[in-house]
Structure formats: structure tokens, C-alpha cells
Image (cartoon, rainbow, N blue to C red):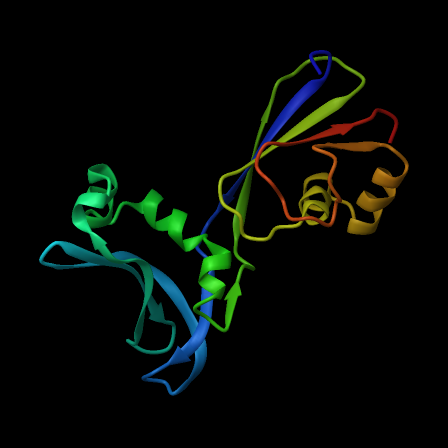
Length: 190
């Protein structure tokens, strides 16, 4: 790969996924957004921690359970401080726990806005290796991202892969969800 031109694309979500669940105030299923605040409740030596979600239509809230009835001594002191300070990176870590969220909600809307940042290392070569960095999993498919990067249709991306012009490492299907540190070698000539 050293003879390749390496382009790094960082996928940066602009928001957290919305959840769909019943709102006790609206009396219907509706979307809730992450308020980016934790609720920490200590009762003697045990602690409960929730991530607070707010209804998009009213002032209703839902508390997504993070930790329940845990002895305060069993929580890492640095992590506990992050909960107390509403650390954004920690909040986003839990807000993107899609499979855990789905257990508590009717649906998780992962169709969110994101930004693509490109960094190129200019070298002359016949091949280009694209490295994808994606810190948060929100269900973005590889073929959709490549279609956006190359400004072509998804069917054209799939055709290029079938012709051996796109090689994925690890070798996974283009219709899979994006994984962090995915590398795609783009062969010259297309």
C-alpha cells in the first residue's frame, strides 16, 4: 500500500440519532432527541444514571437507563466525573449505542446529518487507497457513502466492485454498514 495515494475520509455526525417512543404528554408515539444531559441519582451508596431525551413536540422527557443500582465504588472515578459534568463525548458514546437503544424504544432513527472531511496525501500512483474513519455507528451503508464520495450512483459503485475496481479491506459486502478503519483500494482505469 505504500505505493498508493492515500485519502482519508472522516465521517462526522452532526447530530445524535432520534428515538421513537410513546410520549406520556403527547399521548402518542413521537420522536425524542438527545438533550445531551445525564441525570445522576445517588441513593446512599448506589447510583442510577440516565441519558435524558426530550420530545420534539412538547416538554416531555424520557430517561434512557445507562447504569442502574450500581455501587458508586464500582464506577471509575473519571467516568463518574464525566457523567456529572455532562461530557459531550461520553453522551455521544451512549447516544450511538443503537442496539441498546432499540431495546427501550419502538424505533431508532439513524437517518442523521453527517459531514465528510477529506485529507489527501498527494503522491503519484496508479491506485488510490481510501481510508474511512467513523467514530460512531449510525447504520451508514458503504455503497451509499462511496456513491456520495465519487458522486456516482450506488448501482455504479456496485458495478465497479463487481469488476474488481474497488477492493475492500477487510473483505466485506458493499451493502454492509460502514466500519471504522475500512480501507478501499480504487484500481486505476475507471
